[in-house]
Length: 336
Image (cartoon, rainbow, N blue to C red; front, side):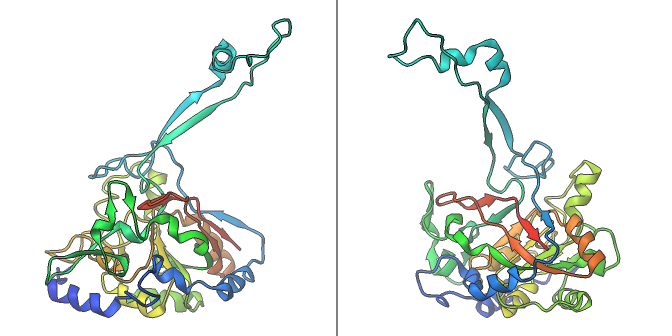
């Protein structure tokens, strides 16, 4: 694919999709403002079969960070207390009797297990916060996050604007699966294969769905579940199918709430640019204010949608309330 995204295209497209100030200068949730009460009611009415589909990856060492060429790592699960501790009596020393306990009476400690998990917030299935990506003004060199705030609003203590905790109750509504792999008549798209705005529109038409304001779009390439089936991730993080840069205008014009994909980074890689890394991200989060969901699992849902011909549903995917966080791990649900 020709490397065509240069500085002029980036600046022109940034102006085209910029939503700064649209919901006031203090806004921190961007296109999630499109989700209102009517959206929720419309989504709830789509529940017909009572079927629930889980879209999240397991939080364990087999995740997508294997082989990734970055600083992220897969979740590390550590036991703090276990059944071995209970059997050995170690918990008795941790939870001994209170000071006023009668020594003539026996004392039975509560036997339990506890654990912790250590992980980057973007390690598995997750939403990116709007503060996750900055936009660099190519004329002045200034760096901004969503809604024109200075990049310094994100410091060593976290995101003091547009953190993941600001999404609140907005991550629920009408979801639409755009099964691009099925539309292209393949089990999965190949690494580096792009998805155009025309692909998105034609896929929706073929599925009999109309994309509406406030929708959550789930874009299936088949990539994540294919890697899980094969038991190896390879270049999943570096070379991937995904949306082309120009689709940012499509999503902006459709006024969608958010998009998510079954890939490492939603957008196609290698990028179609000699000068920009992740150009779609440059605009989606800091300029358009549109949340991105990554590493979703969509194959099981896609099979059911193909079976019953219904590609719209109730979608529920609240983030963890990580104060000032740049992202949050998820276990999203679709209810049909």
